Image (tube, one colour):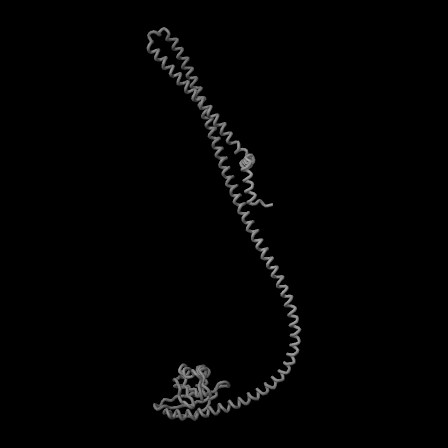
Length: 370
């Protein structure tokens, strides 16, 4: 079972209530060396206290001896005459005292050496204690890091569990929706089968109707072909009539404008696809010779001007015109019975003249060079 945050809180509460458990946990975490360190420090402090007491006692004894020496010297100074006879004994006593003092000083030096050694050991113990404390601090830091990682892992585990629960809830909802959709699909399949049955019946009827419609379409196609032939014949007749009216009207119109026709207006086929409805050469009052190229339309549309300008701009058409001797100054015209809205603007835009059979010139023709 995973160790959770709630388990960790319970462990801390139990350790606070049972101090012996806390001491045991410290021994496990810190180790025997760190646990005995306070006792070692207390023992070392006791040794240092004993050494310092011994040094103080020797210093007091030395002070007392020196005080005695001063008293003796004062006595010798005051009664040197009276004590001449005992000078040798005093000298011997003094020598013995000096030897004793030297011995005591030697003992004091030895005690001082032992004290310095004890201080050195104390310093070494202090250094080792500091090293152990440093290692303890590092271990504490690692323990805190491990605890932080543990808390993070627990948080991630809790988040993953929450997400899993959400996904499980969504899966349950999706399962319910899938079952509902399956039920609807079963109902739809039943309705589809019923519709298919009706469609089969309808298809049979449609096939019969298609056969009837096919026969009617054949009759309509034949009738349309016959009508198309009649329209073609009618269009040819209309085209011939319009070209004839164009020739008569243009000759009169040119004469009224002071132009002299150098040749009758006639059509000019350039190839199997292109034919100029009217071509003539005129001379104006100043003696300038120009070619007129005329396209006849029953109803002049704006697009007719764009198409006529495109034809006259093709290099192949211009070459064919030059081969037939048509070159130099050219004025293109569109002659029509009626016109659509926008035809005049298109005529000005493409520099093509517009003349209507009943209304005359609607737009002047621009001068082209060929």
